[in-house]
Length: 227
Image (cartoon, rainbow, N blue to C red; front, side, top):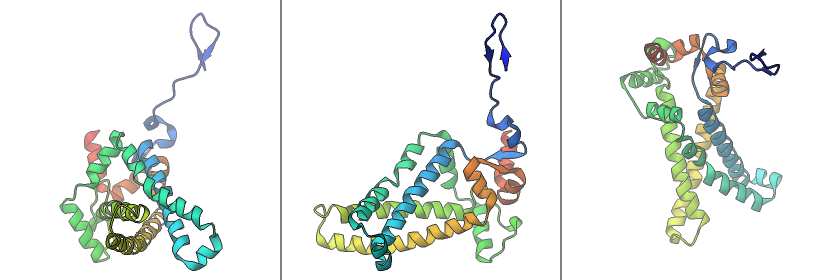
C-alpha cells in the first residue's frame, strides 16, 4: 500500500499484467479469457445435448431419468444454443486470430497427419503450429457436424416447415450423426485427459514453454519472432 503526498488515504499498488506475474514466469500465453469462456460454454452445452440425447434414445437411461418432456426441452434448447458461444466469441480479436490459424492447412500439417497414420509419436515427425493437424481436423469436423445437427434438429422440431420425407431423412441423419458426435467428443475428452498441460492451458490460459516447444514448435518459433 502507498499513499499520495498530503493525503493519509492509502492507495493500492497497481496490479501487474498477467505476463509479469510471478506465477506465469517461464510460461507462454496460449488462450485468452474469451477463448476459454467460449470453450467451456460450448462444452457444457454440447455435453448436455449428448446426455439428454442418450436419455431419450437409450431405454435403460430413459427409464432411470424419466421426465421425458423436460429432457426433450433441455435437448432442444441446448442444441439450439450450442453455436451461440462461438458467435459471441467473434467479438474477441484473439478468438478470431485462432480461427484463422485453425483454417490454415500447410505442408507441416500434412507431415503431421502422415506421422499419425504411421503411429509415429515423436515430436520431430509431427511439426505443429499453435494447433496441430489433428486439432484442425477435429475443429472443422465438429463445426460442420453442429451445423448439420442444428438444421436436421430444427426440421424435426418444427414439423410443419418441411414435408414428411424431409423429416424422415433428417431423423435418420440426425440420429446417426449424433452417435458419431458422441464418439468423436469422447475421443477429444480422452486426448485432453492424457495431456495435463493442454488442460492447464485451457483452464488458466498459460502453458509451460518446454511443453510448447515440444508439442507446438512452430508456434513457439513464431512467438519468439514476434517478441
